[in-house]
Length: 181
Image (cartoon, rainbow, N blue to C red; front, side, top):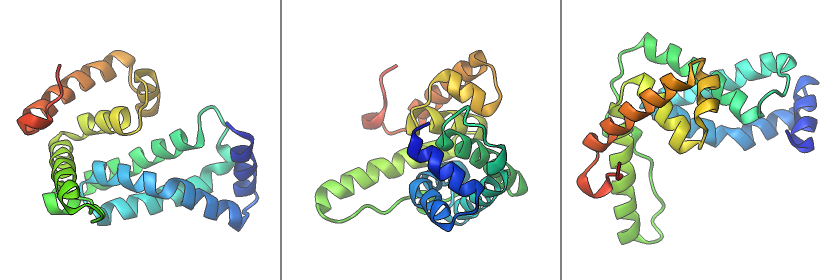
């Protein structure tokens, strides 16, 4: 963990409002993107991020620095989203998970937005246990061992789920977006 992050963690432990603002500014958008991918809709994702940040602030005295603050926060987020998803049936629509793209280059943005829309729809269609693996591996670039630690699984289980999730994504994505095996 970098010394700046150590200083901010100490500030969070002391209840420093500047450290709290840093936490939200530094991790809020990333947490929201992950939550949207996991929950499938913006309102639930916003609730998940809010609950994650509140939980983290309450639990910060127990943060030991064995992982990065980002990894720790995402672990909390995954648990929070699991609770939210269990409390309701997943009913995400494609419109709810689509993220708007800026309109600087309308033709290019439309194509990128369509591609992003197709990827989000395919990820949202996966079962939660596969969606978590895909989001952590490809959207957060975590290694197999890191994902296993984050989810409390064995590395072999993560590899197996990643394999089946990747196969499912290939089947769900349009031909031009499919990744070679």
